[in-house]
Length: 380
Image 1 (tube, rainbow, N blue to C red):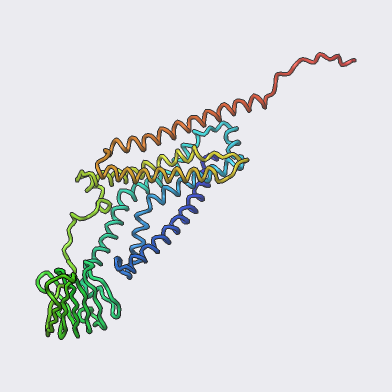
Image 2: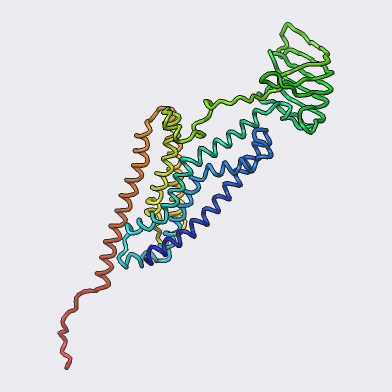
């Protein structure tokens, strides 16, 4: 049908262009953020682009929802400005008739949003958290770059080495500054190597000096200097990993269903809410896209973006409320998503009825008044 095909074709072009722009913007922002984390030592510099890709993949439900919303609002607003909507309305099409072609276009996007929210979001978060945790669990000597001061995993020690071997297990001219048991400890050695003792890794220092100084000036113990030929210290890095500390955003959806808790319910409400919000955005886009050609062209678009921001923030706020036990999952979702759905449907019906009365008025005006009999005598 010409009506459906022309609308879906323009929606496809608008959606594709909007998606490319939003993905580019998000990728740029995530690249800057990931580079900042890498400079602080929280992310492996060699995995910056991989972490960025996983992060962008996790944000895809939001990106797809916003792209779909902007595409529908932009396309229908353009049809209003170019008086194409008047032509469709004059041909007997009401505003409700746009619901079917819009959802026929949007259903693949809605399905992709559901997959990304229920499966892609937790998988991407688990991959990112796993890489960061693995990088944090590496040994202290592996954190150090020759010629640079670096902190340990617990942020209680500072390391410096002059040179290291290609395997990263041996270093020369080692300097360690640490705070332990209320003492400021400075250790220096000519060389150091990593050795495995049981389940832990130790840094074995050779030919060095150790200086212990109390942090508080009122401490009874004084300065203590000792020299050693061999000295061992915990190198950090714990290979053990427990899934109990896994945040809710990284847990699979089935695990959230099997483990009912406030935090898991809040996360589950957010994931399901992304799909429900995307459905409501289609109806809201249809109602807020009407524009007066004589008024500014960007007014309705700004209002649409404001509505998206408010709805999305309420979704995140609801996740926080459910996680803290302030509201129940079902009651909040019914109040938020059900309320927005009722508002969208009522607004759509109201606009559709207004256009119906306008079309009837236009037909009466076009038909004119009934013809009156000619009472003038043509012979006069």
